Image 1: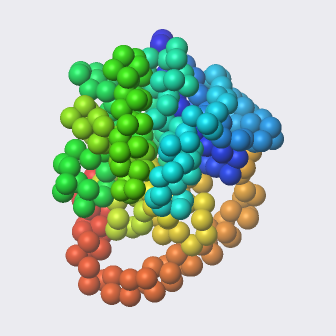
Image 2: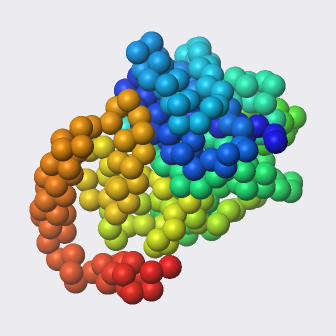
Length: 301
């Protein structure tokens, strides 16, 4: 079977979350699937590298750390966008250069988990497209561009990116719009590749930030993306799919003691509930709240 190439970018602070992504992929991989991970290394410590390598105990795989030359991203460092977007997020824009011998890869952000074998996703037919992904949760952006795609999970045709010199186009767009880029690399990818992105079913990137704010209400999410500030590892977050993150965290060296985890999640839940009521005291008057109730507990898709 052909190897499934997976790319993840992180620095040392995000190494634990990258480890959870990898653990989730390995835990759901078909026994015949061969996985090869390329970790775009923005400064991961030896200790955390060893912890990531230890995930091979879940399923044998290849894990490669790709050292990053920060000078390659000097122009991207000038982009002024959300404070939580680090320079590592722009590494995907240079994947064709960083991995010259790879023709196809699935790229994941670190705030995701995978619940399904990736062979079907990896082997999609690009047609004439350059990348493939799922539409973004941002309704404002979708009104401007009905095909606006979330860049957290992308199947990337690196062969075509090299052939068409797309990386140069990414850089040209960045230089021309350096003062107006608001959505970082996601905006760059969508603008440069407009009309060349294959749209995939929502289940391949279920974006969720709280109970009511989800891109789809499926109860069978193949890939979950914890978008925005409501990360499952943050105390008091109000994320509907939080349990999946802790399911896979338990497979890693970063797992919590069972009693500690139970107590932590209990306190976090009540803090989240209190925080949400303070943030949206009239939430029960919002139609979106009842839509979420209907979709989640009555239709149960």
